[in-house]
Length: 312
Ligand SMILES: [Fe+2]
Image (cartoon, rainbow, N blue to C red):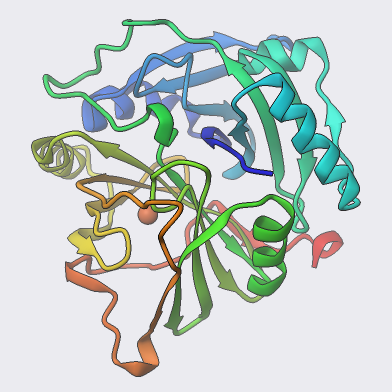
């Protein structure tokens, strides 16, 4: 199975409505308030012509609600579902109202070994030419590369890697041994040139969404967001810097909805046919960054929770 790209991410938070200002004012994104099929409000955050890329649902806790993976076609989707079932994964076809809530034509869902809900879809509603953004240079790298990337904290990195590479078919771009409370970080790509669509950070006993990354087409948009984040009083989780690995120039801010948000520019792209996984190790003197990226609270945020005993 080759998943094409990361299509959307859904979260819950008691502070969901903060995105109405945060999206346009800090990041230059568009935010639309909608009602779902149960009559609940949802904030749809867009950074291209898709109906949304991030859905923020009001809820009692900060938590990851779902991750949406895009397949090229309904045929590919059927094939992926059959493969998952052959691996013993319980996959459910979505009801018509669930498809409507996600604005997709075809939809299935399943859980990973840690209880996170994943969705496989094809045909997300698109409004060609609609996206304008909140800043004069609001242009983001999406298209074949999907929304950007999401990074999960997982309680068992080996179990997670087994599932996401051998069952879900993602490929390894980089492996890093971080040190401290973390075991390893794995950077996994889908069938597109983005260096990683999913990052996994191993941390005993913990599970959740560490951050979501969006990539701009120009450096100024990162600087403008940096200024705006300061002005909005967002805690800066990591100062500006450039990563080793994907070589992204970026910074991270803690959103009022619990998870961290990375906005970056100038990542490398990966040739799927020729890339070999890189391995970095802090114990061998690896520093992790080309420059910058001073972290104030690497890994932990209110969207990362102690593991549900059901999934430990
Ligand atoms: Fe990232």
